[in-house]
Image 1: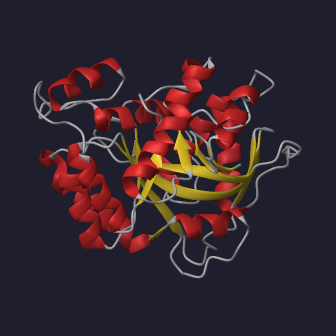
Image 2: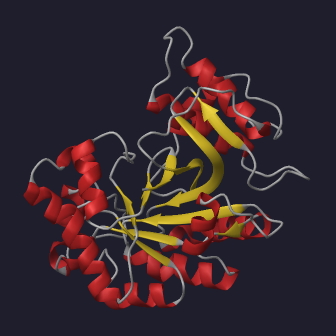
Image 3: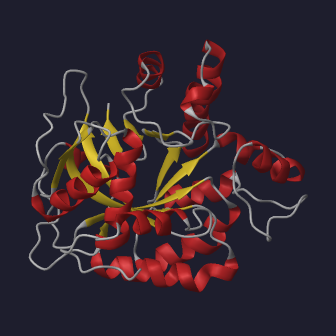
Length: 320
């Protein structure tokens, strides 16, 4: 299916969803829209129809996905946002970069921000990655922590290009050797989400660790060879102005955290480890499978007490 024009809704939504699902999330840069949410327990969406072009489109997709079931699910919301990004990522002329507001399905509400999610960036794909990042740099301005904090506070965006958050997950060696030089050459600031135990695992064991912890590998990643960044490389990434964030210790999902020991291992110690090695505050967290804040009171409390202030999920970026 060819991408539609920016304003025209996808007419064959089932086929569009299937095409999205057939992408290689480990090897492709996946465009996504996320909702910015300044979270508080008493905030709730009033179910109002979304405003703006993008809001109307995502509401249309959510309505179709939830048709016949009465109530949309969080998976429906993520799917609607994914289709929105796959078919309507480019800004339209004259469109305000941050005023498109989503409030759909009673699930989420707030301004939309674009992200591109990368995982593995092997040398064989460097030309494709460069083309995608170069095109993104022409159309968007990348977002740092201060920029994102301002957007979450409702502050004005002072640049003509809409905001974009390039994200690199897992802390792969090839993120440093392939992606970082491209980002530097193109003047883009990225966010690197790091599972600290992967970095700490001895080189001889990294391949097995990745296989055991849902960290995708490529043919370049062979047993006995280094798959992850080193701490020196990660310090260099941070020194160049990119954002370092936590992806738990072992690349775990929120459902894997059930005991005080789990909380210490996956939330408290990895943040401390990153801050110790980098010499700077680490504010952001993402779970494997992208669970949002607000679904598990006990873990939410642990997240807050561990010092995290930003949560990246499948549908939102939340300030907590």
